[in-house]
Length: 361
Image 1 (cartoon, rainbow, N blue to C red):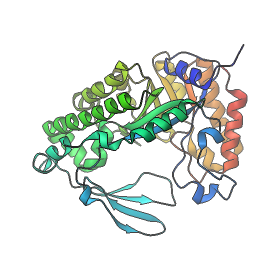
Image 2 (image 1 turned 90 degrees about the horizontal axis):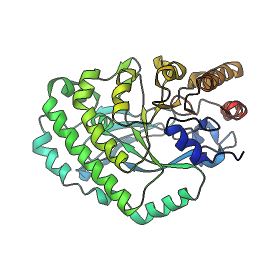
Image 3 (image 1 turned 30 degrees about the vertical axis):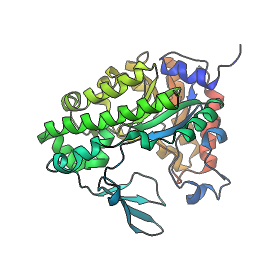
């Protein structure tokens, strides 16, 4: 029997069916080459080719700040850089360690949204964020490769976090629901304008990979009731548009999102990616309830990889891999977020060897 292609494997998994093997994907933290991997012999970041992954991604959708005059580098040294974007938001980006940027300060609030930001945001022409000729060429090149091609971008909860900051976002979810509803409506409209233009002028991908951090280490940022009232309607709008184009949807979310899994499924999510092990999630346990309804990607505890202990790496990889195979649950083998420079190249490649020896369903 002829082996399934990479696209066939991923399409089958995202349709909640079982192909001839478990899928394979991975993300790597920025600056991983400069922070140790180059010294270990890795010379470029063409990860899909180097590690024969099943997916590759291109394009990136987020709503640009309506005040480009505010954009600046505030401070920079060898270890980090602090910037201000077109939303007036300040972030500290680290150059020599893995992780998300530190939140410093934010300008958009419920008090000034109507007077200073709303009309400027509505006036943004999302077409200007797309280099059509470049995107067409990139798509053609990607589709000539064997990997399943996704377009990537943010959704509304991640936009809330990066534009308002966590504190104002959380306070507003509880005390300013009218502001949240209006903000989310405007921002989601901009996303729909972007995707409609990209699909028409550039063409469709194989699927979508959308980033939407709805959880942190101890649970979701908001209650399921609040999520269903203030967030889910905008997921329905955006994700429903993807479904109108018959595109499978992968959603990345950090943290423990389990109370929101039902709502995510209801909005058309086909696969959840990340599944951070340190938050208490176990993909095998999730699959016992959700196989046949949801594909899962990730959950390999990066702490085992960082330990350098081959027995711990083996136990982690084969425990998840064999557990999902035994359940015949759709699974894509991947770390529980991204590979940091603290993982040795040889240890990551050992995990890949375990996968390739044991990946057949």
